[in-house]
Image (cartoon, rainbow, N blue to C red):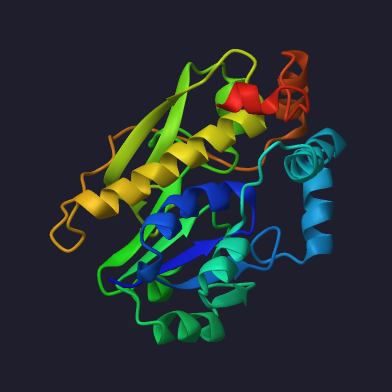
Length: 262
């Protein structure tokens, strides 16, 4: 079995990948890491979009989360790049997974499975068909709830009692593919976006590794997602962020973070 990961280079994707790296590093033959903050946008365009659409509070909140996770955390979570370097896995940086250079790199690894973990590109049909068995996605929600962007943010905003992680087959929609495995993750009192996302990513990563240990990917029969008018979320609007803050919710905190996550 040959597996290639797709991801952004952050701690959430690291939590998703780490269990498989630790159990079966011999299975992972490549890692494609996004080189853009938002798909098909330069970093300057991404910053302008987020400031215009979501506002300063959201941008600063996400920056603070990134800084806090690196500087003030009691334990270090490796990113996908750190994991690949540690285990000697080749890395390719891609600004668009659907461009020929990215697809050629992916095909050159001859993967049986391609698994997206917190990846921010739309994966088109040609790229999805490269893997012999298929292309899967590990999403940070209990699908079909909270398809799309920022599922942890929206779960907290809407006062959900639980969220989860979902391993599913990638198709032409956003998080609409058939279900392989799911795990529910409770939302705890006082959770921040960082707390909830970290627990979901951690539980999802363990679920992914367990699934590959216990399931036969070749003969697997995924099940359809429940029918219904399930919304697909984009980045939070300014109003979403104002409502989030009015409820006393936070993106991250420094003191007691690890206690609340664990």
